Image 1: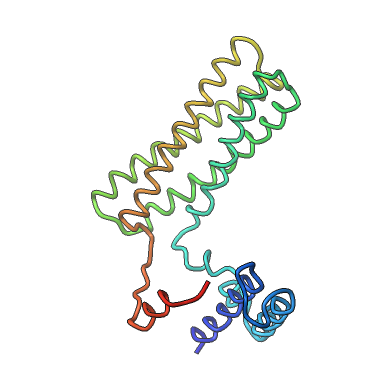
Image 2: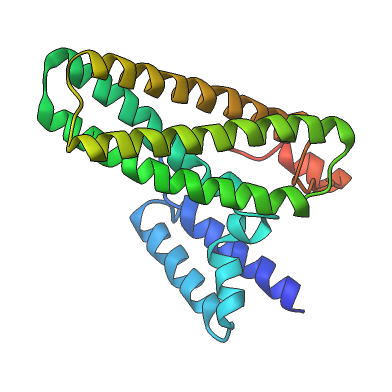
Length: 219
């Protein structure tokens, strides 16, 4: 009963998310349809417990076996942007840009620590075979290397009191570039585990009717 209720509420939420999109042509779409869908969704939340509400509002996170795939996006975005901005700012001699890049480095380091911690917890909780284990070990190596490099770069920058200048900055940027190479290689292995081996993926089998509906719905 709870499962059915949650599925109905989730459908209401998804309807609210997509209602009134640019591709809608049916009567009731647009602003009025979006407001109607929102009110229907809010009404469906009445009487649910906090945990049930969370499942309905955040169905993606609720379905995840662990939060590592979600957390890992933050260090990737922050550390990549740190390197690009710091590199460009070094060429253009924009110290104010480099201060912004430094903030991204510090935040990216914190995010990397969270991602590594979540990944280590996920490693012991996710079922996987020997072939995937070898990939996971290499993925873990890159993740820990990224964390260590970002910590070193953060401490280096903090001890320097700001952007690094001269020849030392060339070495600093080379290590930052190596950090981003590790990010690319680690992300590639993470994608390999998920999209080829289906690690932590719970596939949903489609019935004949589901398959028919999936291939005949209108955009």
